[in-house]
Length: 198
Image (cartoon, rainbow, N blue to C red):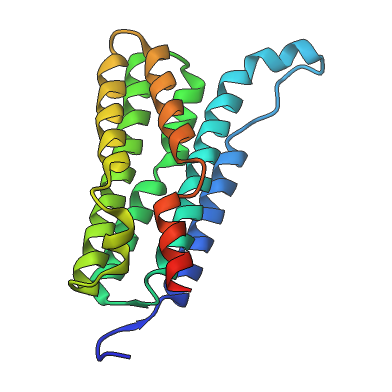
């Protein structure tokens, strides 16, 4: 192992724990309806839908994180800070989820939700670049990602969703859900690279 580098196991364990806490916080924000009839559930469906979308996003990040760090067995201090940067923005998802769920189809909460998703994605892209630089010219992660068109298109869709929040908020959520649908299957480029490495 090179000097100044450590294995990625502790970083993975930290990320697993933080994401588990984030999901726990989100579910605790879902309060039971005041009434005891099924009809009372209609008042909590916006919160539930925002929770489902946010849960899917967290699952995507968790899944891809494990794939990425199988290609990154050793990490530097800069990689650890880049990972913490991702976790910072992920930790804001419960706040954005709760606000969006309490005020469905309102412009500011919808835009804020999109901004948090955009910031998470931008932090993820930064982490990718930091890993690729640390790995050097023959970076397995850089080879796996190629030009990362999917990642770049996702950033554009988030920006569009933020803008649409002030016009038609429901269209913003369609874009946010579309990005999630694109990423819900683990990145095939990374999986293919893992198979080659193994």
